[in-house]
Image (tube, rainbow, N blue to C red; front, side):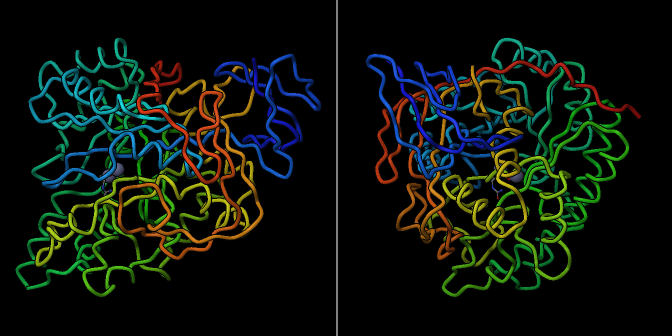
Length: 466
Ligand code: URP
Ligand code: ZN
Ligand code: ZN
């Protein structure tokens, strides 16, 4: 017994066309102008709707132990929130505790993610490079199907790696064909800026962006890309926010380097005026790198990158903390847990402020939010509407307007950084693994139904060597 999604307009990264989509089990088995149901088939009317691939979020943090607390969504609530927003696959970050074998961290993450309701993978974050780490990295790729790593160049005293460790991660990743995702900020510079600001009595959330200016992001992006270039490693710079880092990415790409850049909706749509909201309201927006000032070229550079292909993907960096959790940083902005919710907002925001506003085509939206993240990270069954792909689909109705709000989103976050943003259209249905998991109002998901998706290293891992 199959399911036929009838009469919608299919959108891929390459084209748009009217077609029925046939699903058998969890796989797309046919696309055609008019597919006839077989006995026992169900049909789903998609007329008037866009039929998009389930979106892939390459950057989320569910249940992340961070800055003395744990991010508020677990794998169940976080993936459910994603599904309500049209995201059917996430890539979380499995974080090594210093000294911990990488495989032990993977075991911990598998225990947490067993309750996911959407599919998932991890990037393996290395926080402590020891003599056996190269062997462990090989094992992570070959035995665990995790083909991307993560390094934090910031968060000194916690997750941050130094240049020696960055060097070694890039070297090993190049040898084994893995991608290295990078949080690019100069953590030492941030540390000193923070100390200086606090010493001068500047303690509120509005000093968070002052402590992390775009120059520290630009410098670290350049360094990360050069270190990748030294070894011929493939680097993927996460959550890019500013013109300095965009210039570094442009230089690397123009020199023939194989590398990628990601941004997130908050960096495209918000500006640093949010940090002065009353009643410690600015704390909701505290994330790193910070949201940038308008009028100095950052937003323009990011939108240009979205349009012209310099940027490869849009993730969310979903990492929510409640207001009660954020209060830990009252009187000291460096103690405000960094992060915010976003996994449910991305598609509607990209549709409204990207496609409807005339910045990008529907096809480009699909590429940024689904096809490219799936391709870059080797999620071969995800990211497009095509025969043989996993049956993860979004039926998007372009009709009607609504407002993003913490009152209606499914995340545990009690604030939304997109509160009050008007959006055009809505996710009318999300199909996960061949079943309707969200009908536009209600989630119909079973705890634990999400699957860990193993990946294979890219055949194209080598970039340009120094
Ligand atoms: O502030 C952020 N971005 N929190 C999550 C951790 C990270 O740096 O991605
Ligand atoms: Zn980060
Ligand atoms: Zn992140």
